[in-house]
Image 1 (cartoon, helix red, strand yellow):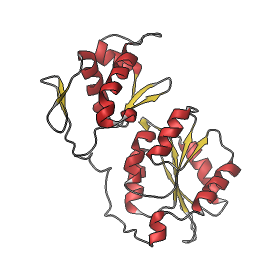
Image 2: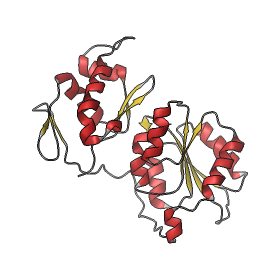
Image 3: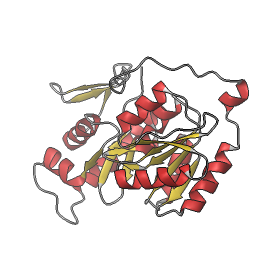
Image 4: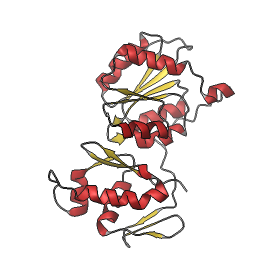
Length: 249
C-alpha cells in the first residue's frame, strides 16, 4: 500500500525477514511521525541504501540466513546513519562485537513500541558526521542486485587444498581446518550450521555432544586471528558459524 509522507519526515528502514513483524513495526513508527521503508532480505536493504537517502536503520541481527553483525562494515561503508540492531540474542560478546563493527544500539526482542520510538528519536536527534559536513547524498543508478563481492588477495585453491595469503605465503591448515574454512568461505556472511559443516567436513551426521566442528573452528580462529582478527568467524548460538569474509585487496 502506498502512503503519502511529508518529505521532512525522517526515513527509517525496517529490515527484518519476518514480513508480519516488519509491517507491525513500520505501522507503529509511522504513527509517531516517521516514514518507514520495509525490506525483508539483505539484498533489498543494500539496494535501498544505494538508491535513496535514509535517516536510520532498524536491523534484525538474524536476517534470514545472514548474520548482519559481520555485514556491518559493508553497511558502514555505505552510510553513517544510526543502525539499531534488533535481536533476540542476549550474548554480551555479540553486542560488544556489533558496537565495535559499527552498530549504534541494540534492542532486545521483544521491545515495546514506546521504547523503540524513544530510541529512534534519541539517535535521530544526534547529527551524524555526514550531516555535520552538509548534505552529500547523490542517488546511485538503479541496480538489479547487490554489488559483487570485492576482490581479495586471499586464495582458496581446492586442487592444492591450500589457502594462500595475499603475499603468497600458505596458511598451514589440517585437512579438517581446510575443509571447514573452504565451506565457510563459499557463503561469507551466511550461517553454516554444525550439521552442514559436519556432513561437508567429516562426512557424517552431527550428533548432540559432537565437538569436531567446534574444535576445527577453534583452531581456525587461532590461525586466522593475526591476519583477519578474532571476529573473523562468529558463533551463532545454537545454530552454527558465520565467516565474515576475506578482506578486500
